[in-house]
Structure formats: C-alpha cells, structure tokens
Amino acid sequence: VSFLSVCDHNVVEGTARTAPLAIAAGLRYIHGAEIDSIWDGVDVHILCYGADIAHPTLTAALRHARRKLDDMSVELLRRAADYPALSISEYDQTAHDPWRGGWKMLQYLLQKGVTAKLKDGFPFYARYGVTYADAGFQDIETIARAIHAAGGRAVLAHPQVTFAGEGIGELERRVLGAMEMGLDGVECHHP
Image (cartoon, rainbow, N blue to C red; front, side, top):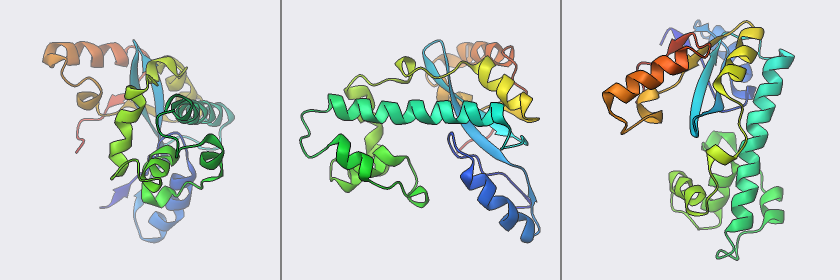
C-alpha cells in the first residue's frame, strides 16, 4: 500500500486520526468518508475523497446522515417489542466501539445475544419495516454539492452491490443516472 484513504460511514473521526499515522509511515493519504444518500427508494453510498473534513457544509451533511442512521436504530427498538431484553434506555447508555466494526445497534444486538455476528443485525431492520427509503436521507445531488463545497470529489460507491440483481442494463442505467446528479466517479473494485 502506498496510497490510503479511510472512508467510514457518515463520520470523519477515523480519517482524521489515520491521516497523521499514514503520513508518518510514508504513505500518501487522502481524507475520506462514505455518506448515505437516497435515490428512488435505494440507499446509495457516496464516497467523499479529498474534502476539507471540517467544512461546515460537509459536516452538516455528515451529521444529518449519522442522525438518520441513529434514528433508524431507535425506531427498530420501538418496533422490536418481541425482544423484551432490548431497551431504548439501555441502548442509549451503551457505548459504540468503532474498532469492533459496524454501528452501535449492530454491536448492541450482538452484546444482548440477539445475533451471533455483527452482520446478522442487518435483516432486523427490514423485518421490522425500518427502511432506508423512509429514513429521510438526503438525495445524491445534495450530498455531491456538500462534498464539492468542501473541495472534494463525490464517487458512487459499489454500484454492483447497491443495484444488485437488476441486470447489467439496469446497472448501467443506474450508474449513468447517478453520474448525472453531480458525481465525479464510480468505485470499480469492491470486495
């Protein structure tokens, strides 16, 4: 690795903490983030590269997306009444450990024994009707404008995952449509 960017979801603490470490190790570094947006009812992740991570327009967009994700978790707890061991007050007091991966709710479900792995928490949202489409995320154009205002580049993240199962023609249509909303690039390689 000679060039590095850390792009955590809807936060910049990781990229801010990594930058001096990468530079000290002789790596080229670019600040990054991955921001949730919504398009046609689909959660679309937009990678932000090279922006001023302290720019007020960008930080407002990040805070908005983070708040919407957190609101989804609280709504999940409200709806998951068939799990009496889960509580909003206990969840509020639970600390999120960013080094364990995932977000706070995924860690909470694991800690409470509701799931066996972090990724097992994803289906809970759909099971209880807590969807990205209804969460109130900003659209792609708004996120792209925020990234550009901060001097960064907006890149469509993992379109083959986001639009999985729609066929190559539909994937192409979606990617081209997203690009028309002010994006600067497309992530081509994703594990």
